[in-house]
Image (tube, rainbow, N blue to C red):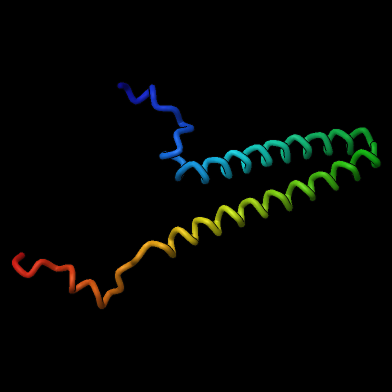
Length: 100
């Protein structure tokens, strides 16, 4: 099997199945946000202030959704890090091979 046959969407490369779903949602929202900002710029140039206000509301809503999703994703990462046992410096001596 060649390296090229492994897709970039493999969950192992993106931190697991739940992480890849959130990453996908985040990327989709970011793309929508870029699109709406472009539309808003066009509306500004056309001096269509009603359209600008409408797009600004949509942008704000998307930004809130994006922030919530990122916070949720970061919260899961924090929970994962907290679930892993970590050795304190005091315990490190317990892991040293005495015969080395």
